[in-house]
Length: 366
Image (tube, rainbow, N blue to C red; front, side, top):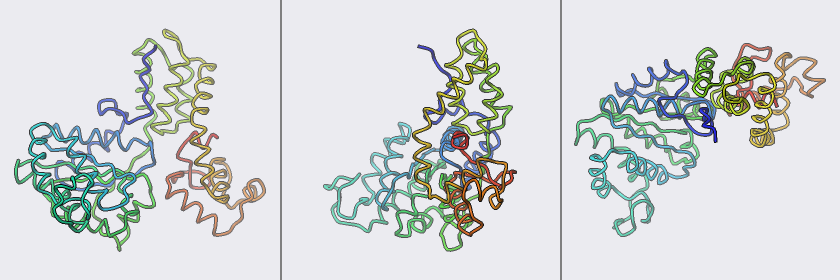
């Protein structure tokens, strides 16, 4: 079975990251100097790969690096449990031994016993925020005991808005004292929720992290990466490379997905021709269709019409053609739909007739 070099179903190892050199340098500089960053971008846009690379670089610089995924958290206890589990799984051997003892001194995460701390240890119930604060304080404990700074990534950080209970205020109350102790990366895929957390004056994290924007991958960097992957197995992307770059529009996951399909459609020792590219594109669209259909079905009727006009790319949202062909009106509901699509990272600002472009190129093509 052929060894396809283009992985697109999971984050790439740090050494195989495509482009992102400027973003990596910026994140790394912030972490090593214990400054905070926020990284916002659509799903499958390379955030996790970039975070993994930044944390690997931080480890090389002597920092203790921990990544916590907040996806699906519902309570303060959930957040505390995710943090504890991340330390348990990611600390290196010597620190892991230390942590095994330290974790037994922390307050339980559940108010009634149980959870990640066995009920037999939970002698008396504690306020739910207490267990979280103990685990948020771990970087300070690492620094006090071992003299090492920490690099902490909170991925899908927007999920704390679903928790309520002033979760953002609880988290900030501890980590705001970590200057010189730990640098944080707050990452999220829901643009609107991340904006609410960091740009709203009524939220605890207002102005507390420097934004690091995720741009589309540069076509020259992406083209070099794809060509090198083909050449490693004596293949050539040939006539498929140009249309691949045109369709992918710098979208990391979709570009690698298309490269994967083109590689499969091109025999060893051959260059891809137009037929190979057609087969690759068809295979990618077929695989992506269930996901794309679900995205489409989750949209309101107005959002579907707005997205269709944006995908068209040649007419304005308030044009007569948009009204006649797609049933759009000039009502405020169009503006609301645009905002919702942007908040959900389905569209991004672009130099087009509408001022927007569809983020997922296969959704736009569909």
